[in-house]
Length: 252
Image 1 (cartoon, rainbow, N blue to C red):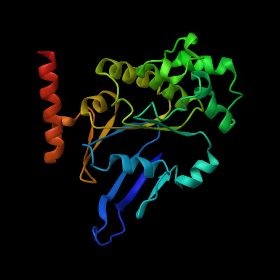
Image 2: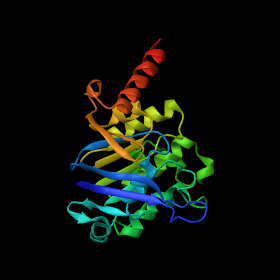
Image 3: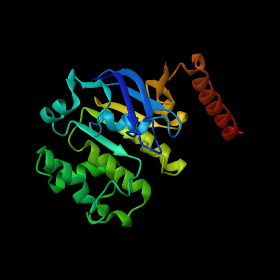
Image 4: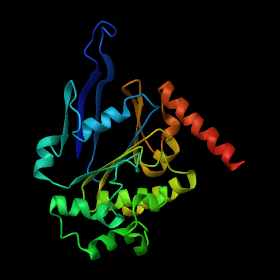
C-alpha cells in the first residue's frame, strides 16, 4: 500500500546565524502492506511529524519518494479523492469551531462526492464511533475531548478511506479515554490500512501488527508487535524496557 524510499529532509537554508541546514530525516525507508496496521514510535523531535506530513503529501522531501499503490502521493490523491484520511493530535484546532458535530462529519462527504451527506449518513457514522445522536447539533466546545476526537475519527472514516494516518491521535486524551479510543480504532479497522504514529509504545503495541522505532530521524528498528523482546537496537531496547517497567508499576 505505502512505500517510503530513502526520504531525507532538512530545515533551514543556512545564513549568518544558522550556516548549516538542520537534518531531520535521514534515508528513511519502510513499507506498509495493504490492510496492515503499522506503528511509528519515537520521542518528541525524532522526526515523526515531519515524516507524517511527507506521507500525507503536505510537505516535500529533499530527496526520496513516497508511493501509494505504486503512484506518487499527489497523483494517487487526485485519482482517489477521499481515500486517504488523517486524525491529528490537536482535535481542538483540526475542526472548525463554528461548525456543529453534524457539519464537521458531513464536510468530507460533500467535498469528495462520497454520498449526499444526509442526516442518515451522518448519524450512522456517529453511531459507529459511539456518539449519541443528541450531540449532532453541538459545537466543538460543547462536547468533551474524547467525544471531539471521536468526531474527528468519524470524519476521517466518512469517505471509506483505504489509508488512514493517526498522527499522535490519542496523545492529548486522558489515559482512560485513550484506551476506549484504541478499542474503537480496532473495531473500525475492517480493510483499512493504518499508519499509527505515537510516542507511547504501549498504545502502539496494543493496536499495531508491526512497529517502527524512530530515533534522531532514522528508522533504527522494525519489529512485530508480538516480538518486542527480541529488538536489538539500544534505543528500541530502552523503550521496550520502559514500557515493561511502567506496566509492572501500574499493575502493582
